[in-house]
Image (cartoon, rainbow, N blue to C red; front, side, top):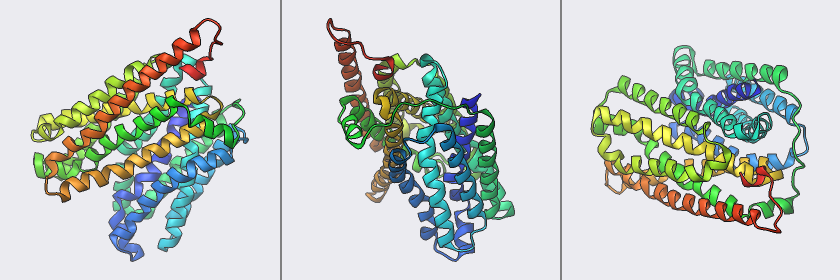
Length: 397
């Protein structure tokens, strides 16, 4: 039950992050700022999640997980309500920063609670369900919020977010049990964790794989109109196809047991790389473009939960911090992807070549995933050697 509540909470905070994208022109006009200035509401939010998440995770390490979840969802609700009544750009930016800090810490705490609430063999499925909430926010939450904002004003979009986060808060209050968590590491112990080979390889894989995916996805809408030849309504439908792919991918990830993750990762990232290599060709046809977008979403969102579960299992007592840093790594990819795709377009290569260039970091991600698999196998064999203490499942899974 609690995993489903966490999925709902993830849906709410995911909608909160991206809701402003759909009503950006209305926000800019109402608050009398330029569109690029309004766009900083998106950029600053992502930066706050990436930077603030790990810092707050360390600062809140000793707090009970249940109480922390309650406080974070209450803060997210307050941030959404404050956004809905903001009549100046500065106030709206401040409200967004509060929401970003709540989200950055929420995802790491929710990951810990989800894993602690199920048997070890079901931990990947639990993380996948939380990730499903984020995926659903892009497929359902943002489109519905945009429609409401365009019909009743952009402030109504934030009222929707406030309602969603409030429901999540009530769910945590009712269903979340007290969760035991391991002692949070000291700063020195945390630094030591990030010197671990498998942690560094896993974080590198996140950055490379998702830089490739986001590079292509950022320019999907103009590619659908200028290359494929779809109109506006069809573009929305094709984005829903991508969304269905993300849900399918995260659902498949939940079927992979933690001890098999490193065996599966090279294949999921390899599938992502192949889709990106063929992206420019596939996007020229209407049917093949739907196939391309579905596979893009499925391969990426199967990879995400697998990496997240593996990294948390490797981190031991520092699982919350590593989860937060992995989320930051995703946000680094979210920043690099548009820059890489923009460089392709600015260089005169055209939209058709974006996928081809995006495949480069994904292919590098496959190589790192293979190195991660080899490193994991070596560590497992070493732990089984005579005279060597057997590591606990949480550290080798």
